[in-house]
Amino acid sequence: MAQRAVWLISREPGTPFCGTVRFSRRYPTVEKRAKVFNGASYVPIPEDGPFLKALLFELRLLDDDEDFIESRDSCSHINKTSVYGLLIGGGELWPVVAFLKNNMIYACVPLVEQTLSPHPPLISISGISQGFELLFGVQDFLSLSQKNDTELNTKLNQLPDLLLQACPFGTLLDANLQNSLDSINFASVTHSQKQPAWKVGTYKGKPQVSISITEKVKSMQYDKQDIADTWQVVGTVTCKCDLEGIMPNVTISLSLPTNGSPLQDILVHPCVTSLDSAILTSSSIDAMDDSAFSGPYKFPLTPPLESFNLCYYTSQVPVPPILGFYQMKEEEIQVKITVNLKLHESVKNNFEFCEAHIPFYNRGPITHVEYKVSFGQLEVFREKSSLVWIIGQKFPKSMEINLSGTVTFGAKSHEKQSFDEICIGGTAYLKLHFRILDYTLTGCYADQHSVQVFASGKPKISTHRKLISSDYYIWNSKAPAPVSYGSLLL
Picture (tube, rainbow, N blue to C red):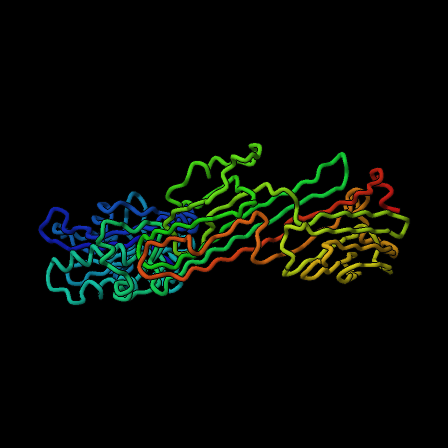
């Protein structure tokens, strides 16, 4: 249910073209959909001149149109629906919804989501009824309290902004254009600022700005001299700015504590209007030194209506939040495991949740588990051949916890035979899942008092931040020689 294009044409008998296009609007995104749906029967939307000539000819409104034309005037072509087909450029543009009222022709081309050859029944095309509703709404708006040509011209000048609100991207939301007029502050529309094409409307309501910082930490820990442990922090700053006005200006600042890790590889949203060169040149490829830019990171912007990602960044934090050691020793149908986890002293010891998952794929079902845990509780998922160590919301005062035990497996069923070497020997791993609210590993935060808003009303400003684990692995430090494919079948 969308429109490919809309026209308003004033009928002017006696003039060379017998009419003038007073307003037209095309929707390129809908046109691309029409090209896909219509296939070989697709006919593109023409320019205003050829469309005007073809439409006036079909409606018999040309001054010299006195000859009988069978394709248009025969009894078999009597039109009772105000839906026409226009011959343009060797093809037929169909369906065209058009009607004449008070010397103004209202016309549109609805989207047909199927091939046009042969013509599908009109009742099956929902865009036609929507097109009539849109055109009647425009007619009501133009005829309401209209006394002279000056008022008509004023309303025609308002149509582009009204259709942004009432019919964004060709989809009708509200046929009562007066409602859209009431919700738009036309005092600002007539201002030198022009509403950008990417912003389909304006916000009306209580002003508020929400800023959320989410950091994801990845880690690969091996506890081996020949393989270095790695970790990485990737941050995303998400914003939602509910502010009145066409182009409100906002400046959001991100700050770091004294010992915070500088932000690097910063990518910003296109709505950011300017940026300090030091922010753009800070790269993780370069070696870290004391001269690295550590903020504040200021982002002046003109926000869109919807929620958006203001920026992405990385950071080279000195240590991972949780240091781990995992060892698995295989003995026939049993494995012995040893786990040690230590929370770094600089990390906030207040988790929303914290769990360690230990999978045992390529083995039979877990039949027995003997274990000793210094903190938290251990759950056995026999059908998934895995253990879940539920650590909870806090580490103990020592910041260090341990788990040891023996896991016994039953016979491996034929259906579960696998040639993957995962979770065997050097590929065995423990994966940590955790989340810490009101905390970031870099220390990055958005100060409410540093947010500058240049718009009407004093907005409510809220900020949030959190740290989430992502691909946080601790690999088996006791890795035997690689297991051959043949031994996996035993």
